[in-house]
Structures are given as structure tokens and as C-alpha cells.
Length: 156
View (cartoon, rainbow, N blue to C red):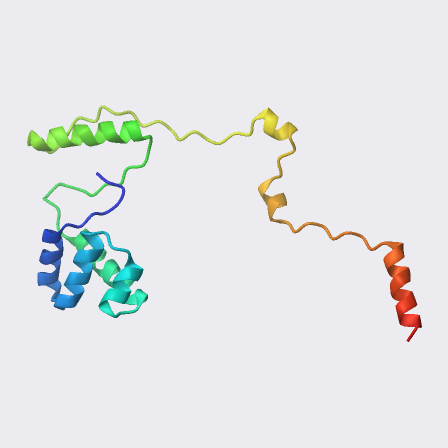
């Protein structure tokens, strides 16, 4: 259960056969997903624009995600503390190896901790988000600058 999608060569071949991609497109997808080559480098190597590389990536990801899962299975994305996610991955892997399609849910979900301001941060005068977005106030014009401007204008 990765938070990222990984596509292997076998999946790319399966998708390519079903969708009838050109051989160059399949080669690009293999280099993109299997060998993890950067899209900009692939655009140069294959003589296509960067937008086309990202379009190929999107097409293969969509096809991969629409690939049928075994009956009764669902695709899940997990976010949380790494120790908890790793424990869940290990439990699911054991259950799948044992042939159990329904592993017992032993993990308890806890609400996400909400960020809090500490008294030190408040006392230090940390600016709020809105204050951080406001432009700094302009310095007031001084009387000296006004007099100098008036003298320049009167000399004309």
C-alpha cells in the first residue's frame, strides 16, 4: 500500500496491448515508470514536447487505475504516522499471503492533532497569516523631501 502509484513493465505491456499504443509511446512509458527517468529528459530523448510526456503519464496512470482488481478488493491510500502505516502494511501483507481476504482491523484510528499556538509564539508577536500577506506600509513623506521637491519645481 504505497501512497504513490508504481507501474511495472508487465502492467505497461498489458495496458499497451489493450489500448494499442505506438511502440515509441510504450518505450517512453517504460523509461518513465520503470526506470524513473525525468519527464524533461524523456521529452528530449524521444523528440516530443514535455506536455506530451505528461499526457502519456496521465493516460497510463488512468489505465492502470481502471485495471480491474480482484472481486471484493478496493484500492486504498493511507496517510498517517509512518510506524502506523508500516504496521498496517505488514498486517495486510500477512493476511494476503495467508489467503485471508478480510484481515482483522486491529489498528485504531485517532483524530489528527490540530496545530496550536504556544504562549511563547504569541508573546513573541508572530504575525498572523493575514498579516504576513499584507504589503508593508509605505513610509510617510518627510517635510524635507516635500521642500526639496517644491524647490526643484520653483526653479523651472
